[in-house]
Length: 100
Image (tube, rainbow, N blue to C red; front, side, top):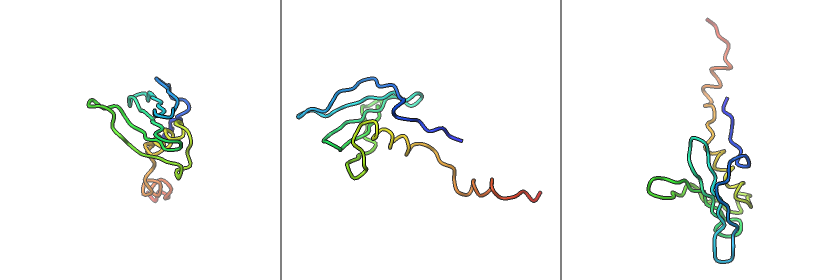
């Protein structure tokens, strides 16, 4: 069983609110995975990025159609995408009776 990470429990390394001419920014630290930056480009439009040796790399762009309105919600969507799920064939094998 895989425990999923909760964005609301991640350490925030830096936070800046969105202003008229400046994106909002929240930088999270994910243990074992590094730093992630959520930019609020416009009201309700977010991008999630990760820090690489060559700079920030865009991972996903989210907007109001994704039903999010905060950086923590944007980060949670990315964490949910990254959480491994069991393959259907693995679940079927586990549920099938053993006719040894």
